[in-house]
Amino acid sequence: MTSSRYVRTKTPVVVVLALLVFMTVVLMNAGSAGSAPVEQGQKTGKASRAPGVLISSQVVSAPTINGTTYEVEYWSESVPTNKLVKVTGLVIVPNGTPPAGGWPVVTWGHPTDGMTGNCAPSLDPATDVPFVNDLLAQGWEVTSSDYLNENALAPTSKKVLPYFVGEEAARNVIDIVRAARNMPAADAGSDYQVWGWSEGGQTALWVSNIATAYAPELTLKGAVATAPAAEFVSALYPSLAANPEYWPLLLMLAEGVSSAYGKAAAPLTQMLTKTGTKLIKSVITTEPQCLTGILDTLASHYSYNQLFLSEAVPPNWQTLLDQSDPADFTVAGPAPVLLVHGSADTTAPTATSASLAQALCSFSPPQHLERWVYTGLDHISIIGTATGPSDPNGNGDSAYQNSASVGDIIQWMSDRFADGVWPDPYVPTGAGLTTVTQTDTC
Image 1 (cartoon, helix red, strand yellow):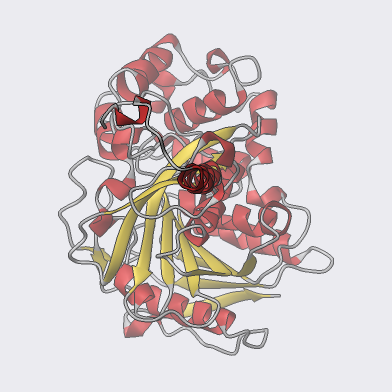
Image 2: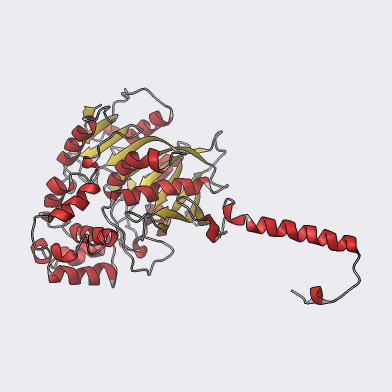
């Protein structure tokens, strides 16, 4: 830039007026940029902070995905403080021309993979969403939140995921749909469904619970919860405590709930021994590891009883866990729910979704719901066979094939987007790989 604008000249008045008009237009446009949709590589201004507002977007390389993949950062809202927080994730746009009104959206709730930014599933798009190309082939846009504090743009951050705080993850998963709608290149519509697995299954149920109040401008068409976390205090917690491989998830739970609600409401000293408290710092916060590192480090060297004071959950912790438990919902969500479980699941025991289904069906009016149980499948094989290698950051994510359930889930979601009749007459097939029992319909 030169200094010529400071040189006095005899400029005609009409030229000066024209320049003033031009500069006024430029300044007006600059002042409104914060509220405009964000194009690739742009960032919004401070005035544009609200849940679902896009902060930035950037195309990333994902050669195995049949669409255009964007890494996005967007605003969401924390639980219980309702503060605005930054969250990252992926927006994956199908190839081709969107239908009138924009692409229908499937928003993915990922399973447990860690608690910090270095574990963000979006760091490897190829392993983020199982069977993503099958979803894209239906003409559905796919969004996938990393969840709060698994921030892909802050991989060295020591902030931790509020693990097991279901409403937090649900807000993040809804707000990435809003963020996609703020991307002109995404052409996202207002109709969406949520599908989640394990921790993400809990998230999907929470999306169903808060969708109408939290994002009334969007239309939830269905919620699919595969092997969801539910019945925390009565069934899931004691089951994990006795599980020699997965009990360390409860250490993650303790740190996640305490980080969300604070040390006064959820003091770790009520749950953990001194050894347990030290290991949270060394394994999760000071030198954060992702899921496989946490499981390997703890399960191979310690036992549950060395890190926890008791198998009983203190009353104030029970209250907080109940607040995140889908089994404690009191009203039906706005769209049908599908529960998918393997009969051999010992991580999130199959019986937990049976009692959950009964609870949701007992509402007046009842939750529209179906529950499918796949014979012989466990917590992992209910999704399919991992093709490997797992994500190199150790979060346990992988690509999958040979799924008995995903084809059935896609057909069910297709019926929901088409406003199909309820109860849905579709009979799950298990892809011919196993038998499926439909145990509940309401």
